[in-house]
Amino acid sequence: MAQRRAAGGCCCPRAPMNEDNARFCLLAGLILLYLLCGAAIFSALEHPFELRARRLWKQQLDNFTQRYRVNLGALHTLLRQYEEANGAGIRVDTLRPRWDFSGAFYFVGTVVSTIGFGMTTPATIAGKIFLIFYGLIGCAATILFFNLFLERIITMLAYIMRWCHERRLRCAGVGVVSSREESSGEEDSLEGWKPSVYYVMLILGVASVVIACSASTLYSSMENWSYVDSLYFCFVAFSTIGFGDLVSSQRQQYESQEAYRLGNCLFILMGVCCIYSLFNVISIIIKQTLNWIVGKLVCSGRHKRLPAHLRQKRSVDTVCDSETDAGAVAVGRRLSGEMISVNEFMVSNKVSLALLQKQLSETAHQGPRQSYSHQNGFSGGVGALAIMNNRLQETSVDR
Image (cartoon, rainbow, N blue to C red; front, side):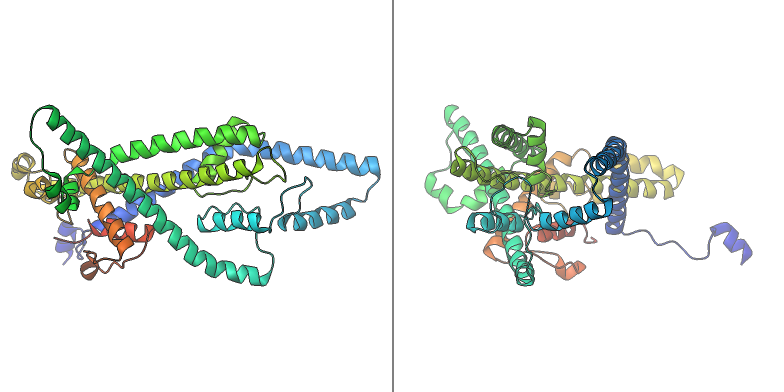
């Protein structure tokens, strides 16, 4: 028994980690590392400013109490009362009414878009209870709208790519499919024209930058913000982070007030749609990168376990067992358990985006969806949760 333990190192064999668990642990570790780096950078940038602000406030408070002979405890009580009034929307400067119809419409827009600036919050119990049910339906519907927006972008790009190809064929004198045959199989004909993930990411990125720069020009002139503050507000609002330190369209009076409020709503709507779609596309690239990293780790582990005289032969024949199905890649499909190799990275991006569009379309029309839920236990969903589940399902089923 002792010899067996010494030879094997352990009497209990180690079960190989499931690729889904490996991908999850890798992503969790990278996110934790990302958070630690972000915390260190923000602490180095902002903590000295916080200390200076505290010292300045203490100095101003002492000067005020000495100059006007005000009791410090009574002043603190007044400041706490002002903080409570500030939570109800009362400000020193004159601002627009919070709960007239236009103010309430601005509030519900920030709720369903999940921005949540925090400038306006319900103060009554009835308002808080109503917000729970109102946000539950409104947020789900808005996320579905954002997903359909991304689907329309992908379809539009597919139409443009096909049109450019057909025009190039006409200029070369090559015949193209007739319009009647094209309309009969329009959906199938677009299947081969799905744009690359990188192409969609580039277009959405450029659109987001153009919208943010245009909106920043408007905000810097109307709100008297600096251009950097305006860009900062655009990212915080469009990404639905919504800190609430800067909020547009809050003053009581503006020059060309109605036009500005309409432009503000349109900019926020377009910006949120573009940034949300961009996040979805970037998440696909991140997941494929994780698949590639896990695949390389799996391949290296299998390669090390092989005998020495077989390692060279195996490295010539194949990179990994999960990357040998070239025929599946040729027709635009991959087996669900396969990893993504370096050579097929660009092709796989195009396939992934086509699958994403198909899932979005079936979710919108409540059609039958081909999923792996019966095999791996994943549940379905609507909107971003369904995208996440189905993207994980595509590579989680054991062959």
